Amino acid sequence: MNRRHFLAASAAATLPAIGTASPALPKGKAEHCIFLWLGGGMGQLDTFDPKAKAANKGPNKKAGSLYDSIETAVKGVRVCEHLPNVAKVMEHVTAVRTVNHKVIDEHAFATNLVHTGRMVSGNVTYPSIGSIIAHERGAADPSVPAYMLIGYPNVSRGPGFLGSKAGYVYLVDTTTGPAGFTRPADVDEGRAAARQKLLGTTAGHAETGSLLAEYEESQAAALRLAGPKFMRHFDLKAEPAAVRESYGGEFGQRCLLARRLVQAGVRFVEVSHNLNFLNGTGWDVHNEGIDNQHLLVQELDRALAGLIVDLKAQKLLDKTLIVLGTEFGRPPEFDGRGGRGHQGTTFSLLLAGGGLNHRGAYGTTDDLGKTIVDRTVPLPDFHATIHAALGIDPGKELMDGSRPVPITDGGKPITAMF
Image 1 (cartoon, rainbow, N blue to C red):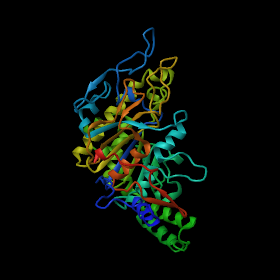
Image 2 (cartoon, helix red, strand yellow):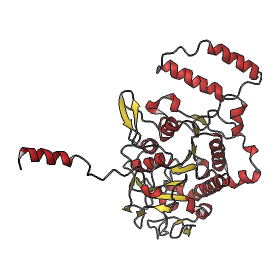
Image 3 (tube, helix red, strand yellow):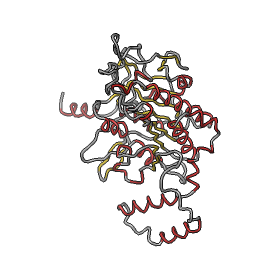
Image 4 (tube, rainbow, N blue to C red):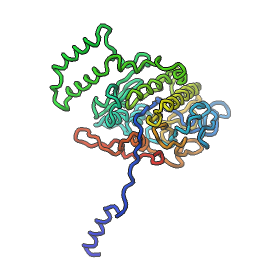
């Protein structure tokens, strides 16, 4: 081959074939996301990827699921016996059973990974999925925040390099709402307006992009949200008693509040299920912590099913993507006192609603739920699926100063869901 032919062949090898094109990324039509966080590590074998029932104590102790399984509304898809309400609405749900990562021994690192889609870096604080969605989509209504957190805040849930504008408003008590948004009793609309006018004479002079400018923007948002118009969304007593009761206990009431916030225009709501008092340990069921794990599963069942049914009744289910997250799963083997350790090689995360093509379950694991058999879903792919469902390009680059950072770490959406 002469030099001219060699150069021509090399150039052709680097170009796409004529008449072909890269497949278009799927783009969903969801408008909101409710992210249910099960801190501690929900065991897939005892919830959404059940296997043969085993025993965790006594002479017949062996690896497997702790509970029996039941059929669901989707033929061939089974779930734990303590999820009867979710089983009835499984046609609106996909248990992604083959999510995986390599962080298994430390809760904080795994929590950060599932929230940001990336490992901790020494020189970059990556934004959480909630902050990215808030940054890209903003609030659906300017009278509410784009991102709200019902639970305890930390850096894993924060805006990272996106800055405070992509941050959250948080609360820990559904009966009172977020702290600091209610005016003192002696400050009426008139006095508040006068104070805001006085403040306006000093605002707006900060250099664009400076910390002071960010502070002024946050202050303006806080003033906009202060008062009864925003706080009325936290009055759960405005809901019919039958609706409130359908959600169950405290976690369920948090989910009901999330529905109200979505209805008001909040783009992303994270709801934490951190009710340790139900079994003493939450979802981190080492040793005797597993003894009352079924109480957590039952609480989740009622709340998740209640949310799906209520969103459907409000004609919001196709517009609202429900995501159930946890930092890792649990192994099939039991520890010395009958509990379970940590497992990141494969575990289950959920998607529901959001206008997706649901199938009850996606991906298959082996007979012990320990090894992926088919359709592996790396964590960045799960993130990419969420972003795509909300109409966000998961490959878009965000800017950390002068450095471009893709929204996901090479994640590709699960195309079968669209």
